[in-house]
Length: 394
Image (cartoon, rainbow, N blue to C red):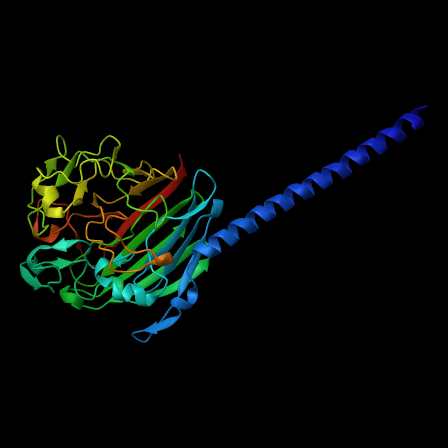
């Protein structure tokens, strides 16, 4: 009797196991097919690497692709350390490229003055009247923005070919040696920038630098974002929130006056979520006139890497970008000088306000404003800064 009961039971268990194996196999096949579909979708959005496979100033340029979870990918070139593409999934599961960029090095060379996606140094943002004093000595710089120095001068880090190493599929390490007095800045500066696509669906940028002489350093990245996808139109309906009670007002040459003023009652109050275009054309505000929109430094309340200092939501895709940083300030630039002069990825022009920038930084013109956080770097010390752009679905 026992044998009669056991044999059917074993047969039933065998059938269950076989069915389970079939179901598991089907699930694995579905997952593999989904990954393959994602890979195909991503490959169509990424630029062809042949547009970057060339030599500039005797150094080899390449396009590197970093991969993370949930289909996130970043394409970065060592020409200027530029973020060329950043692929994330929106709330519908579609893959979206959220940064403006070109399909080739040539495109970046032709549009050099816009700094698309580039690493910026030695000094991000503006230094007034193209000079600063350090330890009583005056250092004249190259004036490439009216009377001022912008983003490191005539030949900043954005046009340098960085030494590149990709230790794994998630990470890219870029290095550059800036010789003493390059663009007028003192000290041999050794810079290391690490890009990582993390498990948190984010792109992390870690900056390090050392010098052999007292100098000033302010490194950032000039990525242009559109969370609806590059080529989708303007960014005026994106919803923005900045955790900043104050900002640094500027003069008509966009150099900070030295004051730190409250955002309360001004078009710069983004402490509560507000669309970018809500007050961007406020003709009664002198600061908006000077910047032709937003091109100002915000004084962050509590910069750190655990609480976002900025949150942006794409109105069409529902994509949410959160910015984390150790820097005391962030430059919000609303693409005011984009004029449609260049065809970018997908044949889309860089139309007016079709992307925005959030450049984490120390304050503009800090070397000439002792009341601002210092950007001085001394021998034996290491400049360190971390910024992370994290993506979520609404």
